[in-house]
Length: 205
Image 1 (cartoon, rainbow, N blue to C red):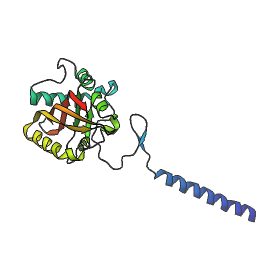
Image 2 (cartoon, one colour; image 1 turned 120 degrees about the vertical axis):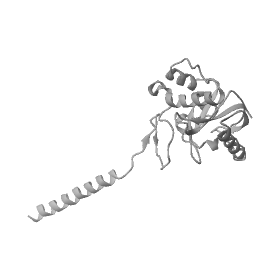
Image 3 (tube, rainbow, N blue to C red; image 1 turned 180 degrees about the vertical axis):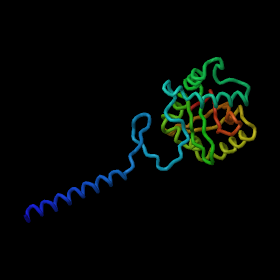
Image 4 (cartoon, helix red, strand yellow; image 1 turned 30 degrees about the horizontal axis):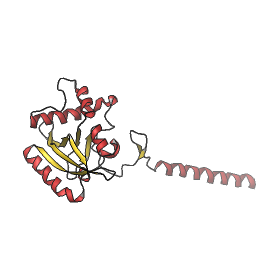
């Protein structure tokens, strides 16, 4: 009787321990997955980017592409891509364009939320990293005051068509951009939605 009683106590302790361990495991946050399947943690950051790099499965992020192209036309009277294409075809043309297009959202320290393929190649980065990067980090520290003045001017005027400056890739390569157009993004209700840049001319330093 004593032996059975002892066994019962041991089993009870083991089962209780297993139950507590299971409850503890449920409290551990599980890391998310980015579109490449790699594990990532949010760390409480506020994410503003569209989910996933532009491709056919998400219609090349057509709504955001329309925001870019419509705002560009609004300020400059020109088109970034053929306006006769469907919304998805315009979005694809923008993503695959041979010139650089990138944008950031709103806020005190805005984060990039779009880059086409040429921009990603120039900045030597991938979509997941780029769209989680504050746009100020695209310029070296000594260039950031000039960049801030540029963006303030764009906010007042709507766009600038002849900007030149030095930027840096994620690999540390410096390059000069010339004759860049920087414009304010305006949504369908006329509310500010960030800023964007387009340029065709650059050289590594």
